[in-house]
Amino acid sequence: MVYWLIQTLADHPALACAEAPEGMLSIGEQVRFQLLKHAKRRRDWLLGRWTAKRLTAQYIETITGRRPALSDIVITTDPDGAPRLHSRNGYAFINQLAISISHSHGYAFCALTDVPGYRPGVDIEYIEQRHPAFVSDFFTDAEIERVHRTPPLAQPLLTTAIWSAKEAVLKSIRRGLTVDTRCIVCLPEEPVADGWSPVTVMCSPELNATVRCVWWRQIGRFVLTLATADSEQTTHVTVPIVEVQRIGDGVSP
Ligand SMILES: CC(C)(COP(=O)(O)OP(=O)(O)OC[C@H]1O[C@@H](n2cnc3c(N)ncnc32)[C@H](O)[C@@H]1OP(=O)(O)O)[C@@H](O)C(=O)NCCC(=O)NCCS
Image (tube, rainbow, N blue to C red):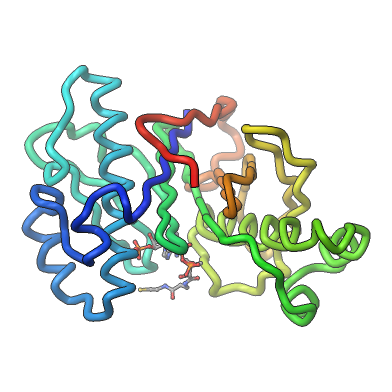
């Protein structure tokens, strides 16, 4: 399964003030948080952690029947910037879970998976008009053609979905925006009401990556995308189909 949750700065009064809600951070995380100087970065970081910890707490409660303290769920940052889950005071199995975090305009979106060998990548993007140069610089010919075939009023949604899918894929394969965004072709299928639609994805061979499934959806003024990739080359392993499931107390923007 892949589980996901959205939270907003309005979900706890401390978050909007760029302060950590009481009992949220472990000692190590408090040290890391103190190093963040800019208010926006502090809010984004906190909201991402808040969302990831609440999602993980809900997952643990579902599995064990007990809800852990948020400070017992520890999220560290790998050298490439990707988040990693650890536990304090038991719940060692969460070290096996893989998570991904994204934040935008006061919202955070997080997904975790318990499927061995799978890695999620998520992105949340505010839907807005993009300059034509954005499309021509960062999109592939197939994506540009799709945008040009789309009525102008629908283009902001489509360009946001394509861009967001690229970011989600690049997170799932742990490359981020260190590679040319045209190494990946993302063609979103038609949206469905209140659900996830597939995105057809093709990756250049030089990425040496196996991307499994990519989905997208619109919620309010945001696009959400969710990708899963193999965490190592496991081409001989049969990987189960992953179902996306909303968990906990997500909100609709
Ligand atoms: C990863 C990246 C695409 C994020 O895009 P963004 O639109 O700026 O921000 P988002 O809110 O969608 O995502 C940010 C989150 O992505 C995650 N992330 C960062 N780098 C990542 C990577 N290489 N792989 C997977 N996830 C990553 C982090 O959880 C981060 O939030 P956090 O720092 O608060 O934990 C972008 O930051 C990037 O490409 N960076 C290049 C790699 C880099 O410079 N790494 C920094 C090394 S310290």
